[in-house]
Length: 117
Length: 112
Image: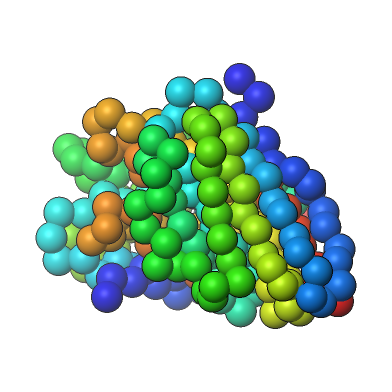
């Protein structure tokens, strides 16, 4: 398996623009997670899905952030409008369902480094 | 709220020396503990985990961690580090939402 795939790997945009980050989880995984990593705040869980359904979005910082998972093999994280403080590395991760302990073995993608100027 | 504390933000060590990365968790109920490693410009990878049973767990590349309930700790150790072990290491525990709470991370810097 190719692992979790994220695109783009780097994104530079101007304040106010819409940004869309994409993720393809590992085939067969039931859980998908979006994280944000910054020096100041460390690794933060933004939202996670189970079987394409959003379960907990309490980590989404503002209404400017939205996430969707239209099918089992694709998810997007959108920021509209973007702000300089959104600059961070955004990770997507996925894990198996079934035995609930498997959800802790998360497989991370390489991340998208977002810079908002 | 549950929290995971990694006491050292950076740990410099010479190659072939032993190392310990400290982690303290806060949960007072059933706890599952994990160490993830992040190499430069990559995502996190699961290094080892404690779910139940033996309190000493080991990874395939020589790291080990011991679950200590009385001290609420899950420190990561390696008797002899290599340059290739240079990375960020994150301790994590399960939280009330059955997801993971990550510590702030420790940067291990192995010097020749």
